[in-house]
Image 1 (tube, rainbow, N blue to C red):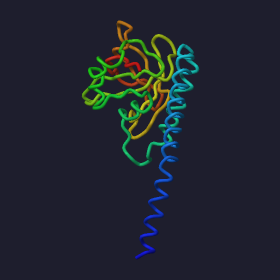
Image 2 (cartoon, one colour; image 1 turned 90 degrees about the vertical axis):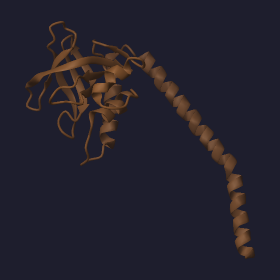
Image 3 (spheres, rainbow, N blue to C red; image 1 turned 120 degrees about the vertical axis):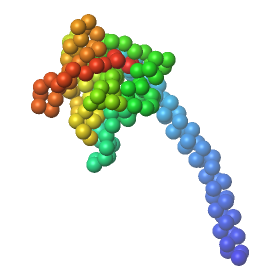
Image 4 (spheres, rainbow, N blue to C red; image 1 turned 90 degrees about the horizontal axis):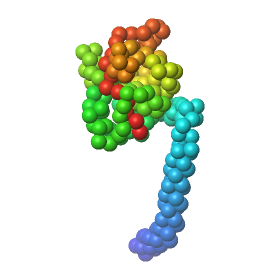
Length: 192
């Protein structure tokens, strides 16, 4: 009984002695996290206008998301777009345009890192999200996306604006065979 009491007392003293060290470690982690976030934000601001740097950062994020995506499991466009862009919206892709109205900027101009928000169609009743990875010219972009090809993440897929008004409201997306598919309606782009 005495040995048990001594063991409990020693354990309690050890935990009490370690508490300030643990708190200091947590404080250090927080400082590093805040510092890292500030550094990342500063770097993003510094290079906000350099498309090559923005694309490189985006591709690094896509690679990280792709490497942590479980194999042999269902992959969806919504969690992929959220993870890559940091845009914190929930629900089916078709609901994102309306949800973004009060929280994020939206528009009809493609920008690297923006989410292209597809409208619902009969073939795609929940809509679709893709991330702009490169602006080729005013009518062509490349996108990274999940589940356009079932359970796969595809990168640098060509998208062509076929809208009469040049406003990206109607597009065609490159198929796996390299041809352009059927027309798809698009709400526009959500910017972070």
